[in-house]
Image 1 (spheres, helix red, strand yellow):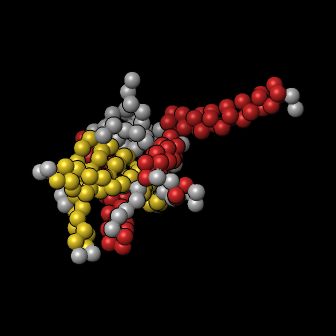
Image 2 (cartoon, helix red, strand yellow):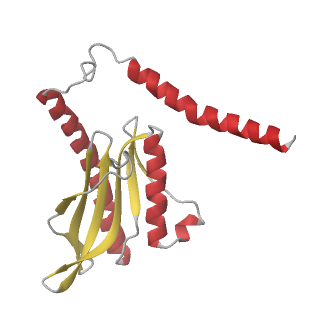
Image 3 (cartoon, helix red, strand yellow):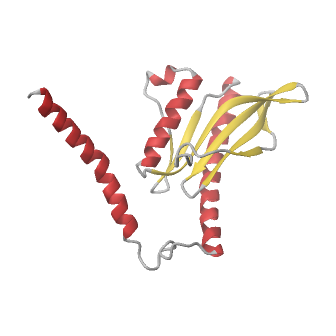
Length: 193
C-alpha cells in the first residue's frame, strides 16, 4: 500500500473511532423523553436535591472503600500507595489497576497514569464518579502531619479534595477530621477558557 493510501486509511479509521461515539452521544441527548429531568432544560430544587444526593451517595461509597484500603495498607506496611476507584455506569465499583510494568513506577507517575486513565473513561462516558487517594503531609503548628489526600469528582458536577489526618500508633490507624477544599475538574470536564 502506498504511503498516501495508508495515511488515508488510518485517518478514516481515526475519524470513525472519534466521530462514532460523539454522534451516538449527540443523538441520545437530542432524544430526551418528555418526562426526563432535563427535558425542560432546567432543574427544580427537588431535582437538584436528588442529583446532589446521588453524587454524595456515590462518592461516599468510593470513600468508604478507599479508607478501608488505606487503613489495611498502613496497618500492614506503615505506608500506602496511590490508588483510585471509580463507579461504572452500571453502579459497580472498580479499582484502577496497573499492568505489571506500570506498578513499579514512582508514585508521581502512578498518579499521572491514574488521572489519564480516569479522564479517558470519563470522556467516553464509561464512569459516573472517581476517587483518587495518595499520601501527603501538611504543616500544623510547625509539625508535619501525615494525611490521606482524597481527590474526588462526579459527573453530576461535584469536585473536591479532602485532607484526612492519619496517625499510626501501636499498629492501629487513626484518622482525624477531614479538611475539605474545592478543586477544579480534571477528569470529567475541562476548565472554562
